[in-house]
Length: 197
Image (cartoon, rainbow, N blue to C red):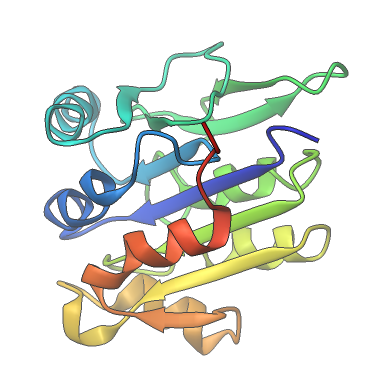
């Protein structure tokens, strides 16, 4: 089934700079859409998306409510709202925002993004947890793993600005591999592949 792979990235403190080491290294024909929850206030995420877009082969946008997910495109969650993936009965995936209170002290919270994939038809979900304070991502991935096959890549301590979020995922026994920042893009490509032209 086409469109059955997705990459979902969570990052916080140190994330914007670190994402510049990952997203520009992904090819335009990556065989999956990429979601990013980067903890940032409203207004800053649009600038982040523009910056990444200017550096990358993939198209990078600040995700808007109702956007239909497409391969080869990166969707950055809007600051100040929680980003979810809604699965239609026809198997189309759209971005839906919700305004629940902060969770893990943040909004957007990656846990919501991960949990929204639990009822999707994606059968290959690659979760990447990068530098950041706190534990966002851990509970969401744990809940997602109860329903889906998930491959979890955690950033290693040496290359993190703050090791909180990856450490939490690793400590919970959820990570399949722990890699340095400069290896993350390569591992994503190995997991989801590229579309043959």
